[in-house]
Image (cartoon, rainbow, N blue to C red; front, side, top):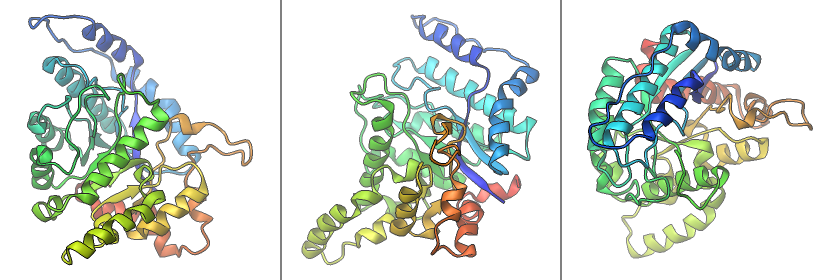
Length: 336
């Protein structure tokens, strides 16, 4: 089986027009209503998505809301919570329509510099009521305008505690970037790399939470490419502190998906982090769905990249395509 651990569902676009209308209102007394749509309309919105996924042979996708769906940079708690709950409900309805094709990952009602304690109730609802198996974590909920501590900071401990309690992984993924100086192409991988480095550098997080499960999206940002530089810093630290673990050991606290749109990058990722720490992901459909004129295939048709790596064994490919996802997402067994 091919399990795609990194995918997003949009749903009816009218829902986001409604959310923009809510965002344009003001005042503490503003009523935050729900946007209603039929299952038929949701099914219609899924057709192009499912057709594209069918074409590449993916059998199951772990799906979350689009990264821009939740306005985490907004200061209004009620607005952020309302939008988060409604996009999570949309994901749950899509899973209910196609339980053999989709499994849900939840968005979190994060806000810039606000403690993730405010996410706990929605996490419990998503797992216990909606049947989700994990979450998407935005490492920069302030959207480049309000700074939050990095993921190695105790600020994030309420989130980690609940993730461990529920036994659910988190996918580090950039979100909206209204106030960032970078475009999407740079913003996502930079914030994901910052988050990954902060966890690799932190000395306490995985001692305090040895069962914490975190995936760094989009191939780990630029982490694998800069491993040599990181090793130089770590060797200097180890010279001062013999108890400091190696950079390789620190990197293996994390997992990485294969959302990289060329074979050379996918191969480098697997070489650097190891087969056991790679999960198949495609981010399909998205901007990587563009057709590469050199191959005639979509850039985010990731499976052929992995199949073409000559030194991978069939057992290696099976682990990346399915086995590692099943080990990491313990609740997945209830769905497929």
